[in-house]
Length: 326
Ligand code: PBG
Image 1: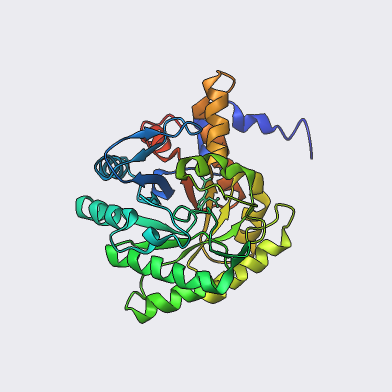
Image 2: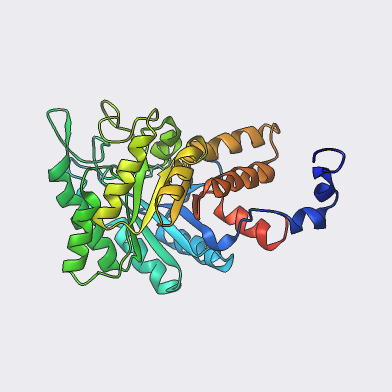
């Protein structure tokens, strides 16, 4: 029984009716705000990410307090060290920038969930996510660094650790070490499916973490591969991951849906720096309506199956959601 009996426009005729039959909704309590922290007191805007900054600890705490007031439950921290070296030493220092930042945030807003990115690339002089020898990124040797880094984050008070390096076996290594040290209740948010993407470019600008030589294709996933994402996720689950992340988000909606359909873990989607930059750039030129582009892109991720969103737009979204603009 088709037209004229069936008329789909009946349920589209007014705002209230559309609202009643809306299938997908966004809410502030699913958002994670990524933040960059550096030494010193300067607040430096990231050129390729207008509206995002490298923050000193004081400004960072202002920002996290504001995020919490807006109803955002969690932040994820990225550190920019004073000195970068071959092994990313500051990343493992109990007094490193991220460890200090975690302590400062937890002191001010203990209920805010503080997640830390566990990866050495922001701290290494060569910009790779692991120990480099003869031009190769060593897997097993890097695990020791990641384990040490995760432990210092948790000892500083981090609530969740998020390994983003794509070394094989890192979730298991971190899980074992956390459990041995009495941190069996700390969840691991795994960057389970992380592609070797061009959309991280503005982040590398922000963290100064572009690889000095080569690229990340020997450890991050090939954008052409879909089935491999399931293998990555499955292994991380076996190793003890609690939440699975897909990154980037919008160009990989099929992968978000695959993970949702195959596994019972919560799925997080990371709208990465390049996705942020695209919206900002087009909106800046007046070519797109920024709020609408933010809303529609996150709705797409949610429809695809994402439960949690890591997004540089978290504050704008939370504000618009409370004001009923979205
Ligand atoms: C690695 C890491 C990266 C991002 C998050 N964690 C950079 C990379 O893999 O090169 C990118 C996030 C973004 O682009 O917003 N520590």
